[in-house]
Structures are given as C-alpha cells and as structure tokens.
Image (tube, rainbow, N blue to C red; front, top):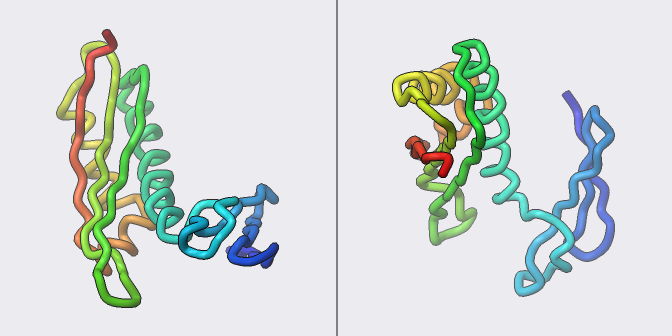
Length: 139
C-alpha cells in the first residue's frame, strides 16, 4: 500500500491513494492553515470510523439485519503536552431502524473493534479506545 501526499500551499496538502481520489489535508486558519482540508488528527478519527463502519455494515448484512440509517461519532481526548497524542477515543455507533436487535448490533461492533478493523487495532495500542451503541427509533 502506498499513498502520495503533495504540498499545495501553506499548510494545505493533497493526498492520493490507489483510487486516485484526492483528499485535502490542512489545518484551521487559527492554527496557520487555510481551512481547505481536514486536519491529520481528525483524519485519524475518521479512519477509525470508516474502517469499523465498513466492517459493521458487512457483518450486519450477513446477519440479515436491516438498518435504515447508521452513523458514527468519534471523539478523541488529546494529551496537553506535545506531541499531543490521543489518550482516550470513544466511538459512538448510532443506528436507526425498526425492530433492531441490540445483541446483533453489539456483536457486530465487538467483531469490528476486537477482530476485523485494522485501524482500531493499531490505535488501541496507543490510546484507550472504547465504543458504545445508541439505538434510535425511525420516528
């Protein structure tokens, strides 16, 4: 696996992987950037959600669980001293649908976070990575 990241201007970079889709990386204007991209630490949180979310959708499809809506929020607490790594990260899996099985949702999340998601597995070695599930009605 290989990516290429090119400097655009200031703190703005563009990354490209095998799909050839450009990902803009930058920082906020207040931190010296132009605000034209996502900052690297936010990208890391998104990577956890993207990796785990793909696992969960795949697992739930195999379990024949129909979810009407699925989203995740990921919140990271960083150390105050440099290099300001994440100390704690929590993923909240939010599901909407009719007659959802909490046991199956929990099992899918457990399989993703404990076995399949390589991003979560790597991050869990450096930070306290936790997750929880929220079930919501479709109304």
